[in-house]
Image (cartoon, rainbow, N blue to C red; front, top):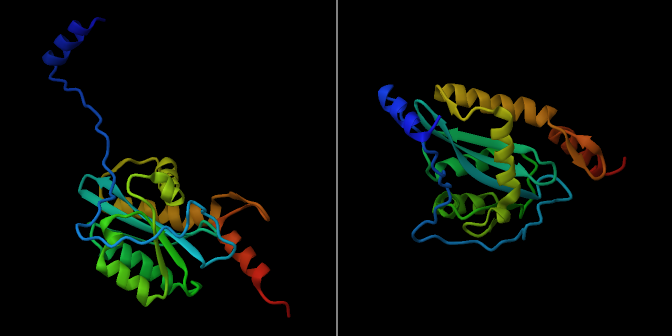
Length: 216
């Protein structure tokens, strides 16, 4: 079938083609942003839990409107320590995820929180929360996904394993994210650890804590 016949049939049946547009990232520099130094340098490892976290945000599309998901991931265990999901892209979102992560306990003084230079992370609210929690802020460069590769790759994994690209409702999106993070990823997703073999994030945390515990 040649292109002219296709065009004629499309006009006859009122069929319109869809062109996929490249999705824009959420990283936007604040107008008067204060940037932190990169304290990670693409070394996305840590010898013990609570020492280094990485964070990022992504958008989830639903027929009721967009949702925004922020995460905090521990580099020692690759566990999503905590996360927040709301219907706006303001500074309260990453602050909420960070605050909940600290609320679970186990973060060291001077724990590094590494992110990109999105406006939520360069905001006064986020920097103030970092100081309150006695953490150190670290940032990669704008436009370089490699500077925050651990967080970026987790979102790629989320999208690949959930499979849904557009949800019918916001509640359905929240439910899918909760099930994936809290049930499937933390408790079932195996990742190779150099010392313990293939273990889940929660198993990794338990094993590291046992190894670091002082002998009786």
